[in-house]
Image (cartoon, rainbow, N blue to C red):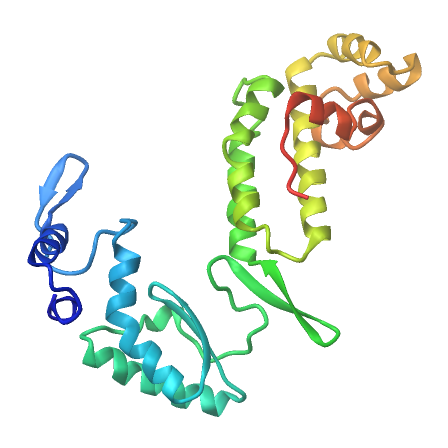
Length: 259
């Protein structure tokens, strides 16, 4: 608040921000007092972080470092591990003057390749640095898709497609800067594979599978071969079912694409 008062003359704005910081926390119906920090996820928190950490930015600029920061997440790029250790120690001291601590469990001096920042990471291609979705973000996406496409949920493909449309477009928009088309294509293929397995599980019995595949245009031999392994959902969804339920089939259902 002291730093804000040096920049903001309107006392009403300062009072409003102070009340915002002092408001309590409501968790599971229980109210508790707030003694430090800002509300996580609040719209004002990143702005206040910028105000407070402006001093850190100025110090990095004064030293001629290249860096990127969003709220309290920061990467500083230097030429050697020794320089990295030196800069990290300087940052610890700078943060300490602001009554802040470096999160040591998330902080490291390491090569840029593979380190994540806001869900992204870098990979090298010839003489260029390319952007990719970081592995933890991909793992989180796959886990979410597994939940939405679980074969025991009892939801039709149309309902699953609707659930996916509520999640996938936002993820795709956030990671639109990724330069890994192959990874995104593989995600699409994996998703469609899961959906084919879901459909086979819902048809369940060989007789039903045979009938439904014939409706999709399968030959008698192909339909019988798939129906003959009715319980092998995952393996069956890789075989001739790819031809009977191609990309266009899922496009008509409204299944979103990642690539």
